[in-house]
Length: 123
Image (cartoon, rainbow, N blue to C red; front, side):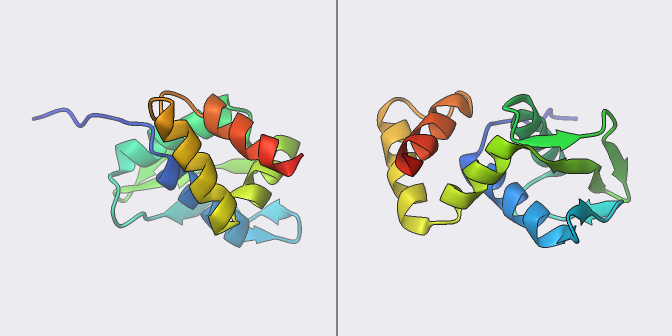
């Protein structure tokens, strides 16, 4: 079996946050929710979800499970910075500018430079 390379994917991170926002019901996520990202394998979705958690943009339980070939994510909420990040990331123009700046600096090594650029645009 060939190991899949896990990569930080800014577009996927944005898609995960947007999907989480869609699932928000009355201020609390409905759990469990099963996420199926057509263009991404489940390992990469899990990896990028973990990166969002490590960047302190989302809160999750410690357990993430594979159920029926899909990632079962157990979010417990967005952090304050997660809501701020999402607010700017939803703006196509700001998102494109931030991605351009980060890619000019060498691309996605972590969420830190993208987070900094998006928050700079809020100021």
